Length: 170
Length: 104
Image (tube, rainbow over all chains, first blue to last red):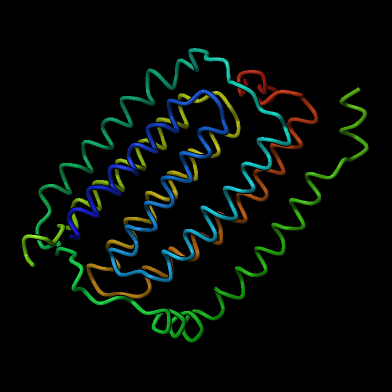
């Protein structure tokens, strides 16, 4: 059962990621990214991370992707024109990506001592997670809330219509 | 039961593949928003390997790291999309080839 679920959702994940690269319209890319994130949530559940699966769907597939979709519709982003891209991307980028993937893949295939995941493994309960989060890691948690506050202020300040931008637009 | 178990290497391979697809998307796409989505894809690939290793060593902290990555990604998305809106206001385009003011 675990194997079947893994194959289905890993396939969906890869198909969504490939579709993200191949689609021309940003809204199609955004929707295939939602597919990737939702199937990743199922994979988290298979690995016993129930809280993260919920957070993945709520935060990523919900909040972040809705934000992306809003911005795409707000800016009325159309089909992108295909250009060749930079020469550096072709000359250095793609070989580098291929090498990185090959190195990681060979290391992982050869790696011994990694266990296996099955459905009978225990689930990390939200209680365990919150016990560590709110006892040992309370300070980083509070710092992230400050980070979120700064991000909200920054987003409002950046997206607001300023005087300088209006003059530059005219 | 053992037949049905999935080796954790497969999860890590999937995470490496997602990360590489994110890099390729970052390199080939010409739309600012799609490039930003490729970055989110890379973050998701890394998150999957965090969860896999948290499962391997039965450590809760790996999952908490993913939680923090999600928080930072949310903040990054908010600020990044605000920057994209500001750039669109100033230049009226989303094509990265036309936004080359800081290019040498």
